[in-house]
Image (cartoon, rainbow, N blue to C red; front, side, top):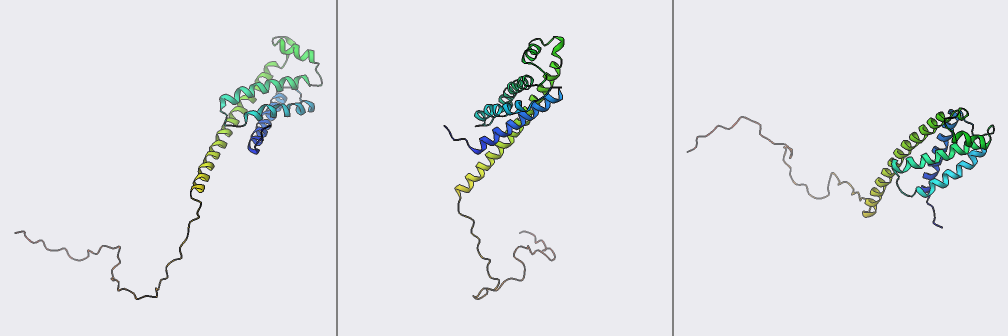
Length: 189
């Protein structure tokens, strides 16, 4: 069994929290009910789906279909575990979307669609930021590993050396001394 790194576990946990949280919020805002047992089943299911995919950077193309599938699964799980509905009524309502007792079908679809798009965009931007940070960190660590010696600082030179002093010009060395009247032009021969 391969060892899972803490970074993979953290990424899968973040994905699970965001996906499950927005799925629950979308389900509740769309008029549904979420039973605590459904949350207890949904949490490990979403985590188990996210963990194998957390090994490398994922783009919006990879995140969006996964989220859509998980939101559908969460919706079915939440609908089947609702205390006021029987399983046959829920499944019949999903099978007959145009039927009168299907009720909040379009609202649920809209709510879960909103959750999928928002979560996918949020996670794709987070993925890009995380991997950019890790690439920068890798470059920095590579540079440090290539030059492991810390910089050596030399003590500043004493302002009064012990040896004999050489005479210095009164004019500063960095100045150009062209002051005075211009020279007279002499005719060339």
